[in-house]
Image (cartoon, helix red, strand yellow):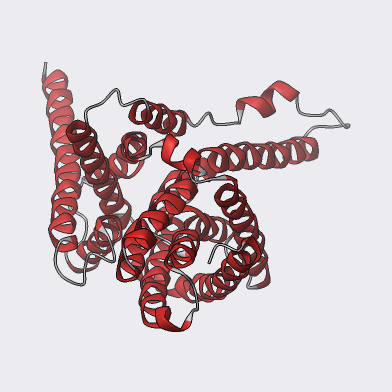
Length: 359
């Protein structure tokens, strides 16, 4: 009888701790939303502010006892749900109408960014996970891309946080630099819109930088940026398969060292290691629903707001799991790689705009 009571008390305490951790993440996400609506904070965005608040809370107050499980749930599960709902922001018909030049430019931009960033990561001996996530955030859509790819490669919280912080800081600096240099770039409003949309990191950065150039620049910048967001689906699939095959090869080599002879690892074991990114497929399904206008616009807007709230809660959970001192030690190399890659990306996109005669 006593043992049964103890088990019930333990379960009740576990649920209480879980709710406490999840509630803290939700509170930090709400605070991040409020802060993102203040002047000068909007350029960072709710997701970046949420992870910074999580890291700050851990550094100042620590993580409440037993709350780690709830924070981990937010950082893993809620993240996937948020990414699925974020697909409601994407209208595939707008992207299709952008034209072949935009698709080609975005494809070249993503290929160039990955090649440069991964090369820099290897040159600077950066952690492979951090290097790949920084490349994804720079090439596609900032913190949302980092959050989407992180589960695919089983990245640690510190690797994810380092990539998010790098992309956020550099994106903010680049946004200010673009706005200041606008009169000297020699681009038409259309050309500048493509330039901003194809090279800046976050959607918030694109809107902030393109706004001063007028409505034409802003509209085109957002379309180009959302075309990059759409590329999150194939990129995530490719990275997931690539990472799973790499892990399987390592497993095979380890098994061959242990087993006598040269008995290869069965092929079916390799395929079992490949994660199926259902949340990315969900993202694409939600995009399809929005494209077909099956969801009323007010409801679609509410879904997108909810998506960012879920992802911000997840970012807060990731922040609570990050050791700030360790992140600072790792932060110099990602920042150096990200800064160099961003400079090269801007120059590459500028050259492509001239080549395609867009502006």
